Length: 298
Image 1 (cartoon, rainbow, N blue to C red):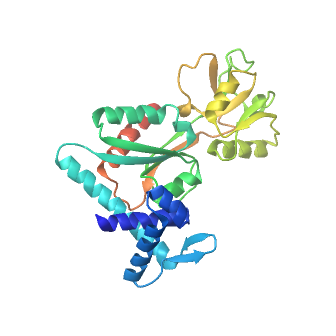
Image 2: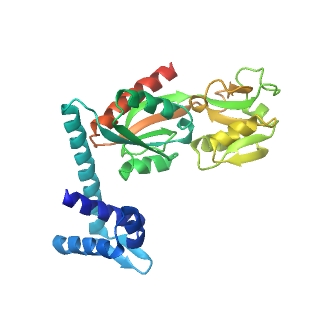
Image 3: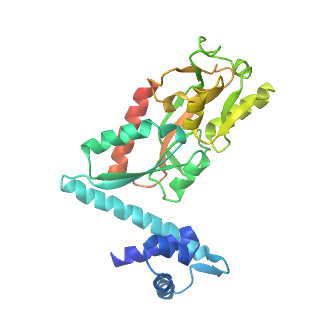
């Protein structure tokens, strides 16, 4: 396994762009890490990093090498999970990049259900909205990505796709609370709680505002959907979230779908990197998650 450790060191330097930072993360001294990189370059027959005054940067050969390393590490993890399955004990580690909408209850419930069956499988969940989630797949930082409205990418292999309505959130005594689907223009008669531009939902809202030539009165803007939900219960504002991401049974919180003439339903995508064979634990979790999302859609 010694060669795998060396590859891990190289990945660490590539990600951090610094020997010192990588050494701290890898629990190794900077001098020892420098020797590991130099010995590898000597054996390879050429440099893989550019040495810069402010750190280390991959050269063209290094970029090819890192892609190869990521594939090798992924293949080895898949092999280890297959060996564990042969013994009748599922082990593994699942990494998921997800839009913030799925953090509050979707993924916690799904991970709990999976670990109830397979307690030796661990998880790492990173919140990456929109294009960042796709990037987590292509950089092998995530096995799976569960995203809202990701940009089209030839690197994504879509495992599940559905659409969810965008909802207006408000207190139960809000003037719009008694209606069915609400028009966006009516929402703008009230102060708004808006997701910031790091979140996919904001892009849909901004496009609708521009098309309808509306100017929102923003009382609160945040990258935290949880904060927006909580503040919606404090003041007579209207905030916006996708229905699948809103926990059920919050007292005094009312959801009203936005009329589809104003904003089309938001796309939900579960994807993996195209051409990558996932470890068994990740592949089985993807199957479970796809079934659950299909049930929610229905």
